[in-house]
Amino acid sequence: MFNKIPPSWRAIPVLAVALTAGIAQAETWAVTDAAHPLTAVPADVRVIKLDDQQRIEEQLSKKLPPNPHQAALAARQLMGTPAGAELIQEMVVAQQGNADAWSIGVSKVPAVVVDRRYVVYGQPDVTAAIQAINRARGR
Image (cartoon, rainbow, N blue to C red; front, side, top):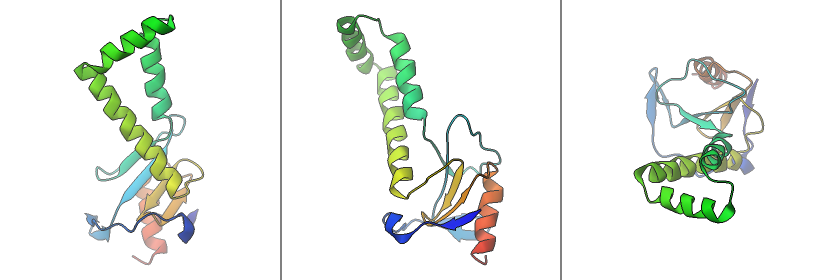
């Protein structure tokens, strides 16, 4: 199912251009979650997993003691380590992905979005979804 995202949902126009299979396209995102694995994901496709933030929070909470005061101390200590810094970066990336998917109106997963304008829903094969978008665009 090929859909054009309504103009009111579009984000700022993309300036960067990447060449994929000889076809110029600005940006491709594959939006999914753990229940909807993707296949055939080209290296230049940004994968956004909508449940990554929850997964990260669950990993963190498993490592913390049940006592709230002790948990707060342990969390502060963790955040001062390289592992804590990495965890913070993972959380930032997860939150940005969720915000980006929401900002363009992604309504189901999996979704493959090209140029923040064109979307194919329900196709886990990212390469096939990109090809469907390119065919519909006459490329």
